[in-house]
Amino acid sequence: MSYEILKHTADIRLHVTANSYKYLLSEALAGVCNTLKEHVDKSSPEIVRNAIVESADRTALLVDFLNEALALAHINKEVYIGVIFTHFSDTALRAQLTGRGVSGFDRDIKAVTYHEAEVLQNEEGKWEVTLVFDI
Image 1 (cartoon, rainbow, N blue to C red):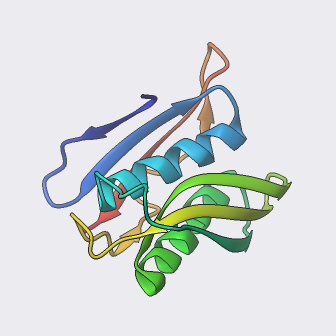
Image 2 (image 1 turned 135 degrees about the vertical axis):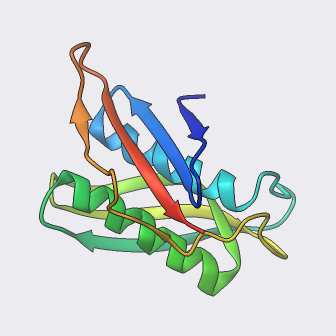
């Protein structure tokens, strides 16, 4: 697992690391969805949703992408277990989210915030970000 839930006084903090920026978004999505629902019934039908996001920079793109996926999850009562990027740059993406319907969520995330969020590439070349979820 390349993400870990960190303790925070009022919200949930998630630290994500990955070998590429694109994989960082994928792992962050997994962290959000696993926080929403720890166990998904894999016998329910698979669902595909499209997401299109444009933002000012890498950090904003990550936060905006996760909030788009979160909005889709809440609207459709589903969580996403996979993502395929059909277009990807530092400021825009198109993605197909693969998910499953759920009867409810284990935790309610209102939003992924910009607080503490900064996408960085560390000295070892890994990408990382710490995210705060408003719950």
